[in-house]
Length: 378
Image (cartoon, rainbow, N blue to C red; front, top):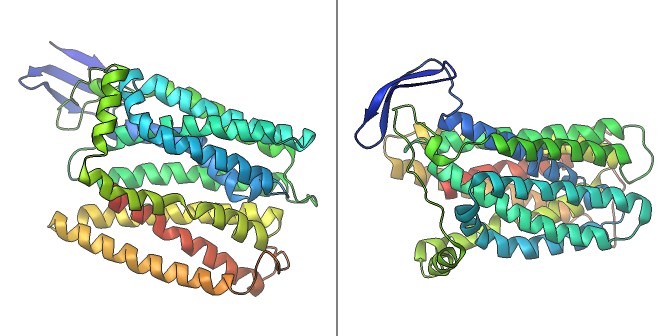
């Protein structure tokens, strides 16, 4: 059975086991790396921009209460649908799952645009709860793709590619409030900032429709991913409950807890309290840029540093542990200098040495995060 795909591959036949003979002539749309980049672009536009907005502290508002309440609702539903998301993905498939998840990000940012005018946090809290559902769906789909599409032995590289593209969204998203609020004296961002974020997120939702299902992805050696027959809700519910009897899954729980719990502290109590509005946007550029560098470094280490996969894993974990201890010790030293009852004078990026110390501490704290997650996933 011969075929041609967009002039990028030629197939002479289908061998036993579903392996396709072809000669690659460049990056194919149906290759795993192309699909991982597409997923990265989706996350660039949606959670990447969400991270940039959250990184401003208080969702870009001077009063952090509304963002704190919205995030409480968000992570409450996220905790539930983070568990259910995998089963929903297996029932709905990638397109519906990812599109539904990305659409909720637009609603969330729209609620802050509404709050800019009405000062009623009800919409923001409801939108936060809806986003928790959507984020559970999106990250379940992303996780399914990232663990099944890459070839064995190259997961670290693919994770670093995804993480770099994804976090570039935070970099660009940090430039948005920095540029649009450069001369703004109000401590809250303007309407144009929220509209720009919503535009990126809408694009991300549309990009989900370009991602191929697993059975249409062909690896470089010509092998296809296993065809997945989507299940029914009752079967998926049973399989989800069985996960809680799997000791390997339970061992991941502490790592999952550690991966996100510090964000509210860093965004609201560090970036939000130490720096003025435009500088918080600029900090986001370097904050998420540091994650890009971390993901590339750990990806190379986990895939190419030592012949033994086990050795690479132990070395990676050791490096991440040392980095975590160092950066949080530095963060503690800075935290001891101020509190909510003794707030410091807001810093601007033009303040020279007074700015550089807290700035480097903020960027270094997050450098280890993609390394940590890559070690867990890889």
